[in-house]
Image (cartoon, helix red, strand yellow):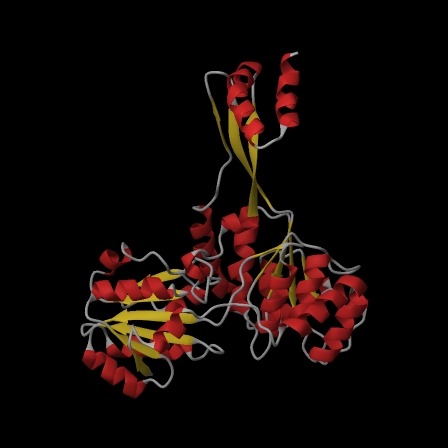
Length: 406
């Protein structure tokens, strides 16, 4: 690990890591997105053959019921059973997040309120490159289902046998995903954003992916909603001389398993910093004078994952404003959040925890503001409306109110 100062240029670069448009990737992604928008299935098939080296026909794109049933034969007998605890944990967490419609009525009979309803159709993207991201299936599908989304479709790249990883198929089937498509990369994002003859158009796309998938999500935003523009996974560990060295080391090293994963140790201990610099190859160490300085640095970095491995972590938690997920105490490694704990592991990266939150029920819902005035209430508001309409030069707005009193 590299020891850096909180006032140095390296920390400034770390702090300003961002998710700006990838100038190298953007043009090629734009070509794919536009191709799918204009030519639909034809373009999807073309890019699948080009990038995944798999030749599919339009009828091959959708996973059949026979393929899903067959997937159960290709997994271990206890796989489905191991999901039970995970599903229970996730369901328990997200049921607490449900938003309810509300209304208020004043003495003049004016009713104001907000009505919440789930999105109609959501597209889930699940990468399946070097390894299939099985956990991302339940971490994205379950919040959508618990929010009440009517139709959940899933896209994931095909393998060389023209099929999908059986574990992905089984988890999706157990969670009652409505449709699954063998489409990967930027073409999958474009297909779900615009719709093709085979792939349905969705209201929102969520899920992880490489830089091409991320850039495609950025480019289709507006045609549909997206969860976030995500970058490489990251962890910041706050530790001191009382922290367990092996736990801290293990969690920092674990981050290196992610492609371009970022690991940062923030510590008040020179001894720990020196030892970790020698033991861990990748990442950064920031030596601070005290906990308050550590908190300031953490809030500046706004990490995806924050581990507080010091005594009384709850006292420090009160001062943390910017973090996607906070793991408190020596027995809460980031890995428990990645797989089992309950909250989704789809979290803001690249410092965007300053203004983004982890994936939740609200991401799959929308609200409508409800306004119902009585004649008495409208008359009372008329003079205020008149002044504003005159100031903004919109006399017809005022006339639309006066018409009610003629």
